[in-house]
Length: 166
Image 1 (cartoon, rainbow, N blue to C red):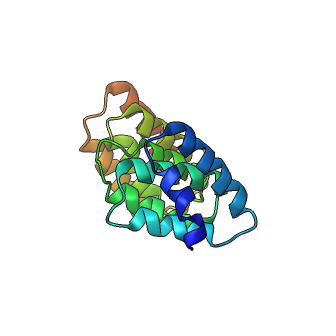
Image 2 (cartoon, rainbow, N blue to C red):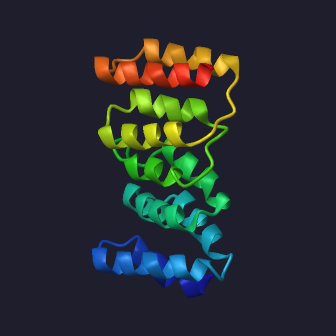
Image 3 (cartoon, rainbow, N blue to C red):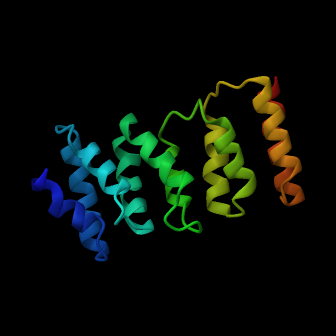
C-alpha cells in the first residue's frame, strides 16, 4: 500500500530519529491493520534491502510478534545482506516460536563467533520448547565437535545438548 511507503522509507532511512518514530508508528498501526506485516516482508525481501533495512524491519517484527514475519526473518538470517550483521535478526527471533528450528538456533550459537548472536541464540535455546529428534542431537553434537568454541562456551553448548537429550 502506497499510504505506508513513506513510513517504511523513514524506517529504513539513515535518520535515526525518523527511523525510530516510523518504527513506533508502524508497530501501532499494525494493531489494527493486517497489511503492515506483508508490506514489511516485501521490503525485507526486495533486492534493494540492505542489512540496515533488514535490522530495522526485524526490530518492528520483534515487537509485532506476527508469525507471518517468521519466515522472512529466518530467510534474512540464512541469506544475510551482510554476514557480519545478523545479531538483530537473531534477537528478533527471541519473540517467535522457534520449536522447529533447533538445529539452526544451535548452529548460530556454536558457529557465529559473535557474542550478541550467541547470547540471543542461547536465550532462545534456554527459554523455548523444541521438537527434537535423536538425529537432531547427533547433528548438534557434530556441529559442536567441529566447532572452534572456547572451552567455556563448549561446556555451555554441551550442557544444551545434554539438556535436550533427556
